[in-house]
Image (cartoon, rainbow, N blue to C red):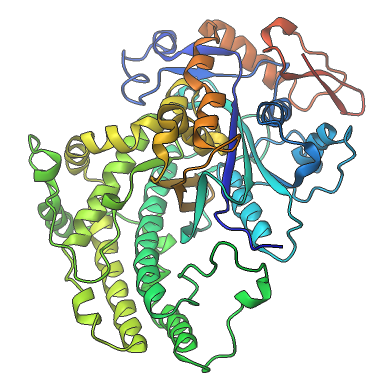
Length: 565
């Protein structure tokens, strides 16, 4: 069969509970200062499940809705991956619950199960789906990624950062949102910033979790920039290099041909060898942050802190251009940065964190522009020498950035200036993807998909030709960054169709407002019935949206039955 090209997201569907609470009323109820949640966190409303709905029912609803809205034949699905951190069973996956939706058509040949690591699972699922379509195992069918989660916390300062929701992504070739291969990065390490050892509520080290989020963001972004620049260089020098696009549309699907031949056969293979040697000889490329020093580590000394702040501290009244001045780009391939990104979607525990995270990215771009230009000196070299110099530069730059970022991590004055200086850029590139996060709250594994749905709802066909930066973070920790490219497609799988089906703003306005007392009583009920048997929901069925799945009962053997309203 023809080799699949432009693999990515064909369709998007979202689901969130029908009830919500107002964050301003939650402030009053909790006795905190006005604006603590609405301004301090940047949240407006928070969705929550009643005892009739959970991550299983939400996943069933969002999958069924996507199949119905986009007229997708259930038999055309060959892989289904789920991302969650709120599974109702320690053995039985949510994916197996979803198989009930495919039984009528007789499709039991669907690969994939659940991916579990805090809020990162759906990103792993997306990668798995794209890799499957690119592989020899692909049978020509489509794939689906489902993220379903609920964030509930004990009464206290963490409760306003809750939420609930689900997202379904249809994945296949010729997609209007293509996953740009070679432009992804990740950072993973062992840390206890947030975890769920037992019970309904998680264990949270808030300050550590925020620190991990930011440091993982920095690491992923620097690695992505370096990969983008390597990709640009090697696409010219060695089309077979791992960072260069390998396949042309219409080429014969022969994955075996993707594998590099034996080393030493020609200049292309020498470039691959040099790449691997560079990775091995430059640990700075892979070790931007040592866990013992960065995530858990000590505060920087005051002298280095002051020095770093002096380099980048903009005037409070400065414009974006004045605060972060543009320098002349290096000759040859341009330095990768936010100037090449049209939009940005981020995992959103709360909106203010996304705002600070984007400001931090602008700081990294500013610091990178202070490093010596390397491209001009490299352009005249032969490929192996050129690659060696590129790796050496990136290793030196990584060490420089690591020092500067560590020194300014706790600098609140710099943070305020960066937020103000980047505000116009934020409104253009990030704010369009923030609606669901502000209105629904933190939906954990579904959070990044909610941001993408918000962007699609706001921009639709205007995303054609756009470059979208995506940042995924899951505590514990696993983080990743990747790039989507908007494409012009027609028919049922197009950006215009996605926008018409998502209708996010309209659906948000149709929800029912609950009191904070109703939220408290619901969460008490959820805690009491957690992992219980012989349970029949106490909520009224009319609280469930028409067409949504809901829990009917859980029997004496802990087996749950769901049905569609």
